[in-house]
Amino acid sequence: MRLVFMGSPAFSVPVLDALVEAGHEIACVYCQPPRPAGRGKKPRPTPVQARAEALGLPVRHPVSLRSDEEQTAFAELKADVAVVVAYGLILPQAVLDAPVHGCLNIHASLLPRWRGAAPIHRAILAGDTETGVCVMQMKAGLDTGPVLTEHRLSIGATETTGDLHDRLSALGASAIVDALAQLETLTPQPQPEDGVTYAAKIDKAEAMINWAEDAHTVDRQIRGLSPAPGAWTLIHGERVKLLRSELARGSGTAGQTLDDVLTIACGKGAVRLSEVQRPGKKPVPATEALRGWQVPAGTQLGE
Image (tube, rainbow, N blue to C red; front, side):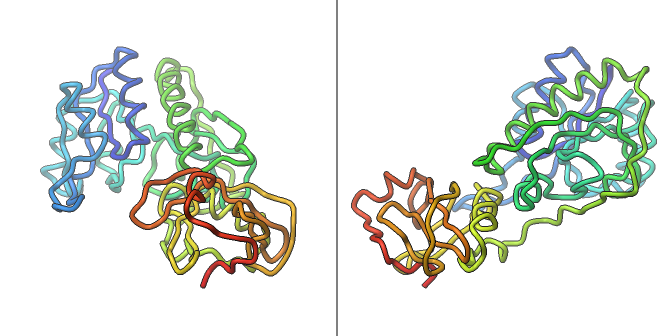
């Protein structure tokens, strides 16, 4: 099929690769414009732009698709389908209507649960045990379109958002290839009105650990915000990112270490940190971080 691909972050790259490998013609790749990044604040292309250029595909990165000029340019691509995954811009109705078979979106949740910007983070933060990807026909509303296919997977007890991100990206890539192959026979299913939840964008203010919370909540916060923005706490006055954890036995004063290997008491129960990142350093296993950096039992975290 003749496709327009619309995506921006690393999550979208395996999908683009899968479409190319399946033999589809990519008429154009749309992504977010390059943004200033790094110490020099030089414009850095999105992962999708970098991959598309490496594949020799034409790339466009308009700031908006609302102008008549942009909408005409999109329509002139004469696509059979537009495949959209984490693009980052609202598609006006004229864009939604332009491809012969409309625009198909890959969304990383089991709709209607977790419509919106951060479905992977929110699933882990909420303690969901299952998630997946949906391929849906796009409508003007936020992730409200009818679902063509749904693919489920379980969330592991120690899985982080980063881990789940990679698995869902691969699942989305295979899901869209299958959906395009069966497009003529698939029946769109309207989303149920019950069970709608919204995955609000993650706010950095959510990242500070409150050790008075129960261990399950703290553990989900650590895993749900890893690798970015990264949950954090103060240890010996340093702002340390907490990137992996697991539930542990023990109890005590909230925020105090129960041993010398970073088992920490919560309001109820305890967690053990398994990966941390000190300021100016790389993320490392907790066992490695503790070499030459002692955090003995009884250390009060968060101050």
